Image 1 (cartoon, rainbow, N blue to C red):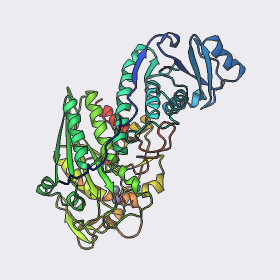
Image 2 (cartoon, rainbow, N blue to C red):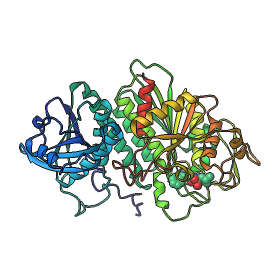
Image 3 (tube, rainbow, N blue to C red):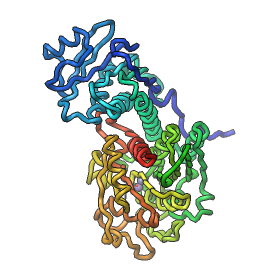
Image 4 (spheres, rainbow, N blue to C red):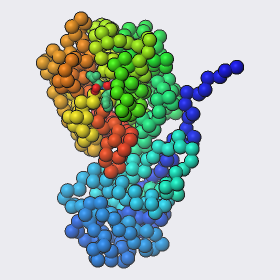
Amino acid sequence: MLVDPPLCPGPRRALSSSPMKVSSSPKPPADVDADTVAIGIFESAGAPEGLPAAAAELIASGEARGSAGALALAHADGRRWLLVGLGKREKWTPEGARVAAATAAGRLRELSTAKLCWALPEGAGEDVAEALVEGTLLSLYRFEGFKSARAEDEPPGEPSELTIACPPELDGAVARAALIATRVNRARDLQNRPGNDLTPTSLGEYAQRLAEEIPGLTASVEGREALRERGMGAFSAVAQGSAQEPALITLRYEGPGAAGPTIGFVGKAVTFDSGGISLKPGAKMAEMKFDMSGGAAALEATAAIAQLELPLRLVTVIGATENLPSGSAVKPGDIVMASNGRTIEVNNTDAEGRLVLADCLVHSVSEGAERIVDLATLTGAVIIALGSTYAGVMSNDDDLFARIESAGAQTGEIVWRLPLHEEYDALIKGKYADLDNAPEGRKAGTIVGGAFLSNFVGDVPWAHVDIAGSAWDLGRAYVGKGASGYGVRLLVELARGFAG
Ligand code: BES
Ligand code: MN
Ligand code: ZN
């Protein structure tokens, strides 16, 4: 009897490095149970207090410098002291702390450090304590589950414990940052998993597992039939070319003492985007396994919010499907109808994200969302416009945009607003239907995507975050190549703002 081989060999071992144990301690770093203490030093400032003589001497002699990125190592009191240059005190930001933590972590990995203690610089607050945790956990992330054996050039050990030496009033911030950074790394796992492993169905199963594990969180997953019954002709059109069942994933969370507007997260989760009949060129097509990054961020942020028991109501909608060419695939010129009755000419099957999101946004509104944020790797054009530095945001609401902008400034996931305007609406008017999913010419590619989506939210305050430039190869010290988990921390921070 012939047996179908499994779709994917599956991971050979743990998908990513095991999560670090993170704690905080009011003790001086010298008394914390650690083999290495990392201490930041500012440029042209004296040595921080509590340093052993051997470390203070490195500063006095100039071997340990305060310029950003400088590292020097001393041995004293039976442990290593890693002196980490932070740059000028006046110019120092939480982002600088993330970078410093990543620089230190890289060195610590070489040194086979097992237990690390970071001394919080004098006078630093919650945001820096959080940033040190984030920078450490995010930079130590590796995805290696599909490699049969450890590579020879990999260091033998991984730091397994991190203690932040800080005043006790920062304990909560440290624990929260550890929880959130761990969820960012889980989003990176989802992003990194290949399309034959992370199918829409397996993403749905993962969401259901999260809902089983986390109190207050529920999930429903619906397939092809349900999409048709719901009249989701746009989402269905993308899914019809693939043998894989699509998944409409709806998560709900209601926190204790929930108040304020119901927040709606919406995520694009195209588990592989070949372009469909409008096939993409072969170069770098493999990267399109990351086209589910918006969905991964929305999902993990939702899990983090539920774990933190934030007092708010949240509904998260994730549209998962493959975009493939086949005899049953949607064709250029086809006309489809979204669940709000708008008709769409599919002039380019590679502009599939907006088709999936159209129905997901309508669904989010009908599920009661009163402020909607969608995250999507929607356009290559946003990479041209903003690179990986800023994500592009389009919004119909100034207050919601301002909240996203300030959340992003806090987490380092900075955003730049792009305009909506009637003239852009004119560009997406269809010739034979209400809307055109991909107008000819390449004017304002990112904005046109946002303008298209604005047709599916009615009057609800909404913002669209185009993360095509930031979801992978972000190029930061703490998230360099590959999946970045972009958006998880941003959405959690935004939700914390709404939770008051
Ligand atoms: N997933 C892509 C966007 C993308 C491209 C993300 C490159 C990351 C890197 C999206 O589905 C897409 O193909 N968009 C098209 C839209 C166009 C056909 C209107 C694009 O950007 O080329
Ligand atoms: Mn596409
Ligand atoms: Zn896509």
